Length: 156
Image (cartoon, rainbow, N blue to C red; front, side):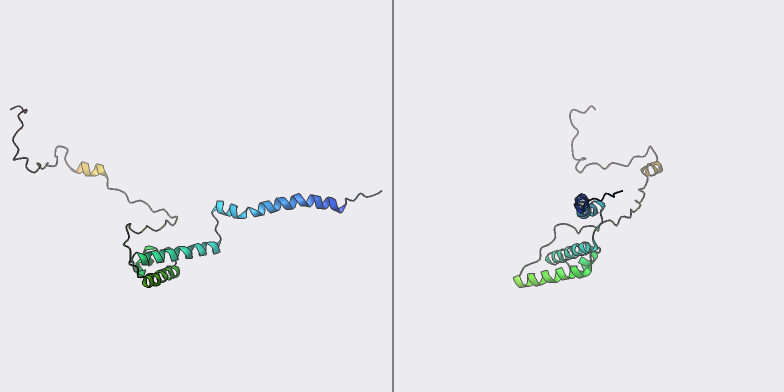
């Protein structure tokens, strides 16, 4: 009996579609990670540092003290905030720029994923039940109402 062997080029042709398929799957790893919300730690650190520098420089330009920046933006690392604040301070002194007063209040920190239980509101029913039904709060007459003469169309 003769044993049939496949030529080496046949194995090569079979391997090409497999390699193309694997390269297509592996090239989408970044997209898959983005969809799942998985973030590379180096990319996250770089983004956090850039945000800290931007926040620090904005705080300095608005005239906020560095300690206030630390407390307002507590979720950002302090070192990049200080670096941005220091760079903006040098830039403003060099170019003799004045501070700009902020128009908006500082932002609230982002939620950490833990939901806080809302505080129960006082019952409106309990407040109305405490007051007798026949009692109404006394209405104050409008200023100058006593000075006004009765209208002629009113019946006497």
